[in-house]
Length: 273
Image (cartoon, rainbow, N blue to C red):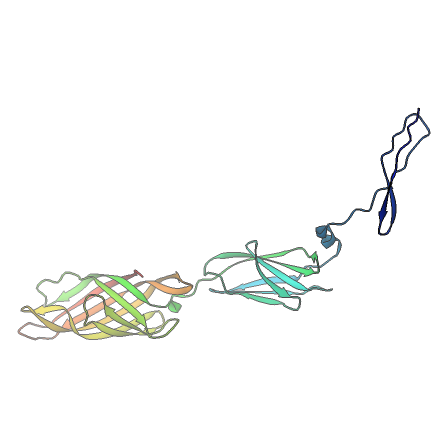
């Protein structure tokens, strides 16, 4: 016994498709089925439309930026999309061949990818990795409060003179970058000197009350400071000196019945804030 298959007519925009299950029993009776066209998903459409990736993708690192460059592929390209460490960084017009990333930190590694887009079509991504460089110590900005530790190297003319420690505030005389600084002591108010910059080195002098007394009376000292930047780090996207080393020389002329005296100290200053 043969059971006839039922059919359902479905009207489509481009024609009529006949759908329905077919059941057969015995031989000779067959029911044909027609499958409706499968709609292509947007992602599949993108793969079906070919877009070539850019070529020559390269990265040129600097301390606070990475310059990316590439050559556009042939054919239509509406835009380029750049990713950094898998996160979307920028979308650029199809005419672009370079991009500068200024949100990087010195001494860090970064992975960049780029893809070309035309409509919904995407090219394969091209990858380049790079590491930003560290600026030289001479480029460090000297600014902030420093904890200063001193060690006596030699002295003469003093009855007893333990090495003093200081708190120095160093204020640049420019709005950014390295330049001359004004040195003041956080506890000895009269102390104030301008240190001129010579690359990574800073020198200056001060004459006035310092740490010496003669018969209980403060005397005038001549002080010379010579420092150099020994370490630096990034602080608030600025390359800042974090450690200074050098020397401090002081001397006192004969006065108030006290003899001539002088001393040299080694200096090690650490940035506090």
